[in-house]
Amino acid sequence: MTRARDESSPLFAGNAAGTLRLIVYLALAMVLMVLDQRNGWLWRLRYGAAAVVEPVYRLAGLPAVGIHMLSSAFGDRQQLTEQNQRLREDLLLANARLNQMAAVAEQNQRLKQLLDTRRSLRLRVQLARVIGVDLGAYRYRLTLNVGARDGVKSGQPVIDAHGVMGQIREVLPTTSVVMLLTDPAHAIPVVIARSGLRTVAYGSRDGEQLTLPDIPLAADVRVGDQLLTSGVGGRFPPGFPVGEIRTVATAATGMFTVAQARPAADLDRSDEVLLLHDQAEPDGPPALLPPMGPPDDLAPAAGTRPAPSASPATPPGAGSKRPSVPGGATR
Amino acid sequence: MNRQRLGSWLFFGTLVFALLLMLVPLPLVLEPFKPYWPALCLLYWSLESEDRVTLGLAFAVGIGADLLNGVVLGEQALRLCALVFIALRFRSRLRFFPMWQQSLAVLALLLNDRILLLIVRVLAGGSLPPGSWWISPFVGAALWPFLFLLFDDLRARLRIQ
Image (cartoon, rainbow over all chains, first blue to last red; front, top):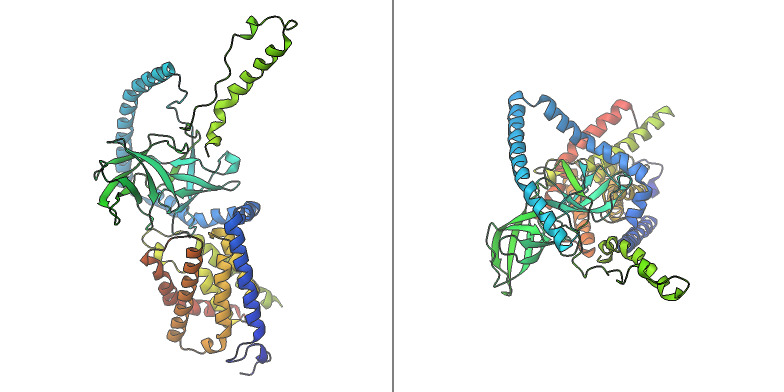
């Protein structure tokens, strides 16, 4: 080799300076990782760099969009007609069910008013589109095209037509990242529709199923049972389909029954998803009632007893704001 | 002068393109086959034009990649630094290997990279990945000769050092 900078790239031996630099960089990377793991810096930094990061996401999502557009542009006529037909039938069926439900919902509303609960069956949702970006975390994340500017907040439940998909994990100004149900770090409180048993469904290692590892041995669980959200914990509203039990077995310890469930939502294929805006009513202790007493106008004239009339006047104002607070308080 | 500028355009262009390719999703079936593009790109440039690629650059590319898709900030910076360091250390030998031997070397480097990633993820409290996770280095090694020839051809056409 007749290179001028031979001593900087020797054929066999390494030089100490390079090793030193490597060690410095590796140490720097490790410090960054630890700091990030502790404090979640990455997301703050990402939020700051959103002007750069988000266009890159859109750019990387373009091929997926292109393929989608091509398939709808060149999809053959018969297929489209078939799809149209199927969608129409689905709509008809759904409308019929909805009409039937409307009466029940109204009845439910009336009964609830009688019981004086505030929970309503109405949904406030926001439509969002999935951006096809591979976030590399073994596929437990989705990127959506709505973000903080559209009023998205961390922790909002995400559903599709078939069931719960997950929850918003991180929010950037115009995109957000969803943590799917199947993430091993995710857990969702569920209830088994048939028996009413309440338990918790965790994501599983292979990322395609849900695991219910701690069902009591005596509990009545069968293959094919439907799982619904139970609303415990207050993050997911109750009554949404979560999945269907596929296998039931006794745990290796022999103490619990372990079940595997398949998610109800189309986690791989969903194009458009719904963000729920109303967080579930917390199941914790009820909000404090405003102190009751005789109405203010029955109170004696202010001149005679000023002190007692001043104190009941303030709590009703605070009490009426109360119901909005516990949603965050149970977290 | 102009050539040089064109050369650095090509250099940074390929790096940015590799980062984009990393983000582009594949159909679910092909997902485990996706090679680690930024590593392959950096490997080529560290073998072919060593004065461009330094550990600092690898670190910067890694931080960029982490910002775009990482789970932890610094993870890919660590992996790419280690990769580029080994490649630069054995550069003089790797360059004169026949292609199949070079592919094997790339395979070893990419496997090492996956092991590093596994260590980082497990230390960060992640779970063990499924078996198909180990396919990607093999795909990367199989693609290496084509990538190498493509880049060489591109450089020869543009007459870039």
